[in-house]
Length: 170
Image (cartoon, rainbow, N blue to C red; front, side, top):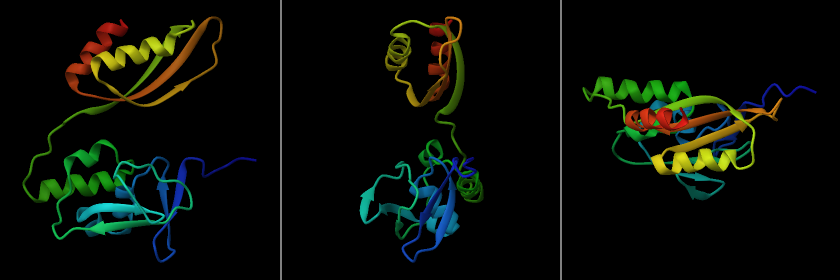
């Protein structure tokens, strides 16, 4: 069998309407999928009746409820963890329309490292990330082949952190 929806997550509104979102989506991705104004005015979220943070990753079948505030003002910080391109465009558009420049706080980096396979390699890479205060969002690795291993990292790093990282990884 092939699972065509392995990169999607399906969640429900409190009224039972299904929303199709990218895997790793957050309550904010959900809010913007329902309506732009709901996303802009979000001040909190509940999943299955429990309060969650905006960076919480949704799972299939969960019921998501957005708590609205009176003010419609998204945060630039949301751009760091939302997954859907639709939500990102709506947030960026709000800042343009309201004459507020977007500041690049940090950026996501995808690195593919091919390293000599050895015990403790991931711990060593983790130590470098810890020293540089770089947040690792995701690590994927393939089984070693001929003494080499491929490790794919998705990181959030500021520009100066990225430079230091490349120096350390050589």
